[in-house]
Image (tube, rainbow, N blue to C red; front, side):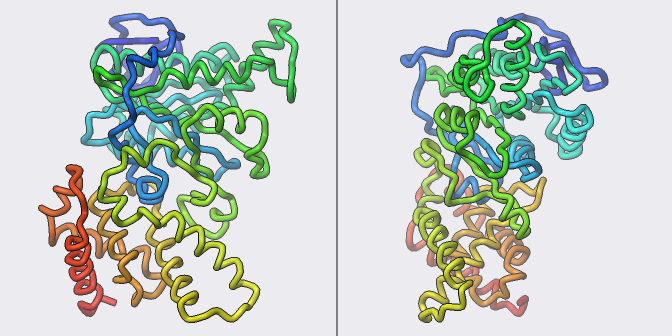
Length: 404
């Protein structure tokens, strides 16, 4: 692993040699690629949010600094996009980001670096790149090297670090290849017996230190045919503090990011979430899951009572509000404004197909109208019922202002 000032933005190979043309600097210090995880007494609870800029995550499955949140889904469901968007959203914060590419195609790694550069995110990001052309040993050490760099920044400089491991399915395959070359016998599902330990010893290292500094981990896993009960996915689910499941069904419906709220969970982040989110999204997870069930039921042509129809109409608008394109992170204020507007019924008069675009426009204008209130909310103050009523009045005025 590489430490010190040489960790400036750019790309490195896993042993921390600068990647050609990436701008990575020279190392001032050397740390081992694997180190013991911090002891329990040195850790403190996860208390501060790590904002992804993605409303569906920040409101419904929040992530805290020091948490390990698994991202899993089939090929091409937008897993890397979640990590890259979160890295882009750390612009202007003190968070340093590390993107560990494990066994990916060189073209895919180059595209990720270009995307980060295009969105001014490379200055606070280190890319640890091991491609599919690299020997299995280099692919194997990539995530451990990335974590050593993160630990240096956390322990020596007291920084908050965000690490994306993309992806641990390929890491397990590289480990299997090495193990077979070393004549270590395969076990369950042809993986060596220590494949669980392979990832548990990696993901024990991200934490929130009592003396300051943290490492937040976003490991990515590729599933086959939506099988989240496969061997490696279940291993990782048991190691991490929650998972974001990306559904190809939602992807086919054009709902992006394709996060399946019913099958996603954060076992820690709710405690770190800003209080204002809890005021507007506290029961949103449950009501949204009920809406999805009701929508499936209504497809059979059943006649619904008026309140059920109203719940369907509201749920469809919530879903549109949670839609978000790539590289479009939203601020805390914009997210809160949108959630207040949609849960309070201010968007009920807008056509469903227009809600996604209009809600973002209305939210931006709500933030412009009440900058002081939103500054207080971002600083961790509570969102009172009076505040919600006031913001709903602003939202209704904006919707009714002849812009429909």
